[in-house]
Image (tube, rainbow, N blue to C red):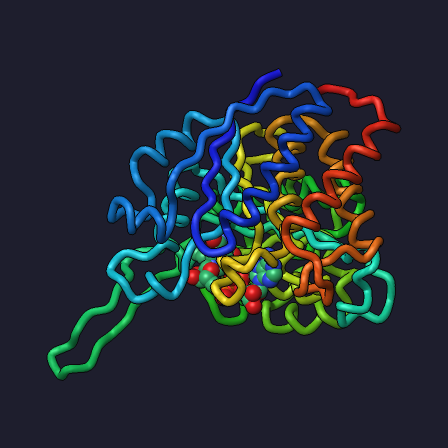
Length: 363
Ligand code: NAD
Ligand code: IPM
Ligand code: MN
């Protein structure tokens, strides 16, 4: 079985955590008899430095030819005020691939309970973040100088019914699969895009998913309730900016942003995908070898599941991660002293041990 993987390490801790994920992939390939042809390309600040373009044509061609793309992170103070930013490269990558549903699962890993604000056991959940609409992409946008010497900035939020429906379908399907309610989050008391969001999600629910319980929250109240009653947020669907904010909040809920991975897909069972940790390039710790690799490794596990169809192997990687957090092997963001390399080696060692007890079914 062979797959093509595009690897985009990016900036800051991006290359450090992607290196860790690729070491895990080496072992997955060996244990699972899978051939993964990898090619690396530039994105973000490093791409601006090398080619004045945060998403160069060669990178675009590569990701379109690949079955899946694994991305580290982009951005950093060096490029924050330039005319071209690393983040523009990431937004162009997402738009170019047309993958609109960004799944951001969160769970408290074993042994990490003390790093969370939670006082009772908690199963975790998934935030499905719409990734190609809203304020991130709406036109017009920009900063213009006014005659009186002032400046004015404009961003535009836009959503169409079709954009809302296609991501809501994924929310309803996951909620149905898991037998839990779907929680839709908006700001329908103020924003027109959110009014359409709520109407569209409700109508779709009544029409096609009458068996799925649907709940709605305004985003401000949702932020409060996610901290106090996270069990109500097992499957969440929300627009682009709210999903960005609430997924970092879920990182706080589980004890560190460094453990969260994500999958961006165009539907359940659709092959192509983009996989990236939820965290950024973490300039404050970059280059020190202490970044938590779990977010990137978790993203790899989602890639194995969603794009390569290797569910048993994906589950094994996740189990290896859970076992090592349980055993206290942790980077400093989780109160530990282990390096990125040490955590990665521990996960790989555990993956090998687990695989001895399992016969891998290839699907
Ligand atoms: P960040 O996620 O990079 O860091 C926030 C905090 O979390 C920092 O204290 C950092 O040290 C810590 N952290 C993040 N990941 C960690 C990990 N793996 N291990 C240990 N600690 C970790 O967010 P920021 O500082 O607001 O942004 C820095 C840059 O990253 C910005 O340029 C931003 O635009 C960019 N960014 C990129 C992505 C992406 O590429 N997908 C995502 C978020 C932010
Ligand atoms: C994320 C990041 C990005 C986003 C930035 C870097 C463009 O914060 O993936 O969560 O806002 O989508
Ligand atoms: Mn973010």
